[in-house]
Image 1 (cartoon, rainbow, N blue to C red):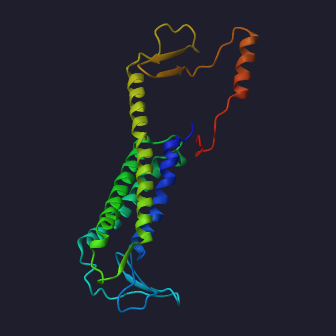
Image 2 (spheres, rainbow, N blue to C red; image 1 turned 45 degrees about the vertical axis):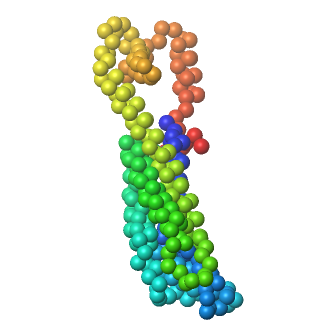
Image 3 (cartoon, one colour; image 1 turned 180 degrees about the horizontal axis):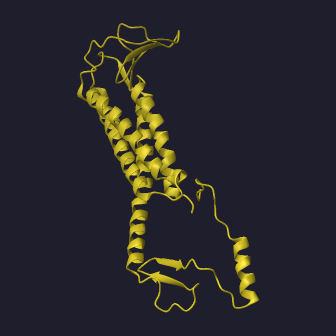
Length: 254
């Protein structure tokens, strides 16, 4: 059995979103302030969630831990982003752990319920970080800044948008596992309700099928096969010779 493509997409995009959002959360570049009055024209002030830095374009020197004299940190968008971004990262890590336990790379067959729950956590994580960066970006020009200065979007907002989108897409891909889990439960229920073995048991190697609305289950008894002629023997050997079963745990359709 191959690992479903939706699981592979989710388990790949999730860590990518983690790296992007982690960088966006820690780096002090949510907003760039340039052309600050009474300051050299080559000074760029980088404002983040946890720190404010100043960079000189001529000397390429950067100085951090700049004092917040305008009350930038006390603004509601900054305070909310400080809470949402770490929360998003925590939910994302938890989702990746749960999804990893459900993906077939670690088990003989996929555990669709765990994979679906992991995808749901990834989706929630993406919504949290997307809310933070969207609100900050909407209020960017309203945050305190020196009069006459120029305000620009920092690269952290771009990384935050990309990371949030990857998490949402990966989460949606993994939540498709809920449908597979539903189908498994439906198959097991149909198998339990079927009268096994069949009443007319003339051949110990008899095969039969259980039909439902949109699926079929094939069963076969485990007793040795009895042959009535040499052609049946050759046919069975030919099928055994060319039958293939993958032994790789992480093989997929990608």
